[in-house]
Image (cartoon, rainbow, N blue to C red; front, side, top):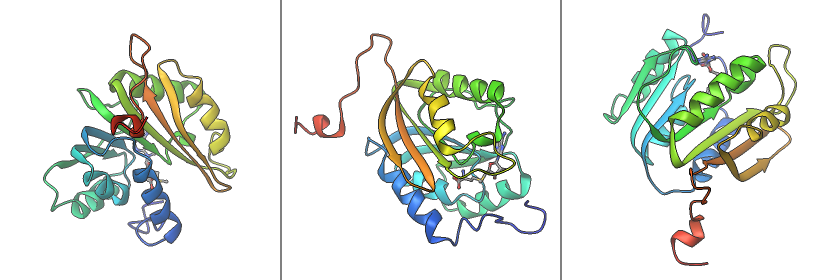
Length: 195
Ligand SMILES: C[S@@+](CC[C@H](N)C(=O)[O-])C[C@H]1O[C@@H](n2cnc3c(N)ncnc32)[C@H](O)[C@@H]1O
């Protein structure tokens, strides 16, 4: 898809995408994150938005030209690094308090999807945030729609669903990495003493 154009999905142009990225970032329960991982960053449009909320962003894509575009898009942001990396075979070291799996999971067959989700859970600190977004229409190359992928993510041990935004076109969900003692992190309102 990248052979003929640097941005095959027009991610930098479409209002649909801008709105979805804004919703994605707005759904993050914490004002700031220490270190985020965003695989499949494509041309870096969501990456620049995440960079406003994170001290460090590790982004990657499997396609070199997308990595080059994302690097150029984030060149003024020294706290963002963009790698050529294909998950789940490649995965960055260290732990994260935010993992963003946006418009990616439907590319994986069921066993590979489970590996990706297991890696994401293992990489998340207890109480860390996992955000997922998936196109919700059937596509011949996709292994499921937003609704079916969301069911799989929801069955993964170690994750607690905290936000579930459903639209005709996409499903956007936020999960918390469950703490070993089972205690839930305080909600955004609780953090500010409102409840
Ligand atoms: C539809 S774009 C999504 C871009 C961005 N995440 C977003 O939400 O707009 C899908 C991207 O996933 C990348 N991709 C697909 N499989 C991948 C994998 N196994 N590892 C890393 N990137 C992958 C593709 O190269 C493409 O750039």
